[in-house]
Image (cartoon, rainbow, N blue to C red):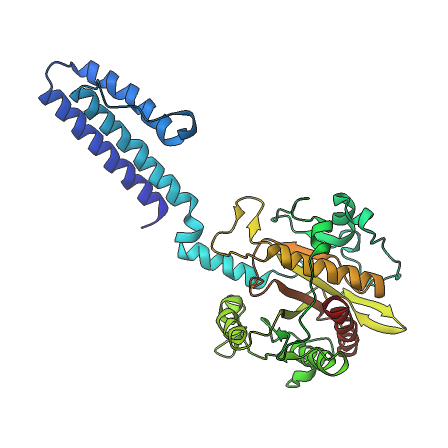
Length: 395
């Protein structure tokens, strides 16, 4: 039964019950006229509504001194706001109870984490719609004094989707930069897990059937760098979550990935860092590239899901107790990259949903390059990303 029909049924039941009680009062309590019953009923409807919706302004009163007729009228009155309240409560929670709405939100989450508009153009302020994006390598002031200015922080380091709410309390640079993101290097076992919610993403010169030239191949290269060059034990998971019956389908990718990733984390309690490595999708005329040490390098973007929308606040069925930690991790990565490799990172993108960032406090979703980048540009980017991770996690 849909919400509209439930609302109508609830009101009809409440009205029928009220009418029965009024008729009962009229038949069995002859000392009151019909007009007196109606007046009592009218006043008690108002009082009951006050008690239901303005509980902070009212208090429970004793039934002492109330006649039988007044009691019956009050009981009838209370049934109406109760019925309406039940309907309104159901309507407010429709995102939880309506399976179709729930699945729609999850499908939207799975398909729109890219920082682009519906035409594939970048949503990055002044860089929007430029055909080729290169960077001058100009350093940005990352002093705590500057970063403590919310407007400066937001304007230089973040892009906030229009559906998302982010305020100065959430983006408190001093608090975020003060969190310790170092990993425990004294214990054994893998410290970093790399996986891909979207494993089928490829690049401008990827070779069909060659995994090494896809986003999965970039995950392999990144894990090799962390393991061999920096001594950070890293596990690379190649699970596929965006193919259904052999066809590309991202609508449930995050749902499908969650239980397997949670199982890996349960089996490997030493893992502290979780990285979901993606490739962005942009207009074919857009090229995300910067020059670092004379090498053409794909730009990357850190991405945070906030599990809350501007319109409705927190999304209760996509909880994430680690939002602040996630934000701290991405900001510290952004600052470290800005200092060492100006222009390598795009602004951190904030969006409303969760994107499975609730696995660990140190969780990153990274959009590395786009379909218009070359494999070489992507591999160059992995080298800078590995070095930045080493800086934040161990130095």
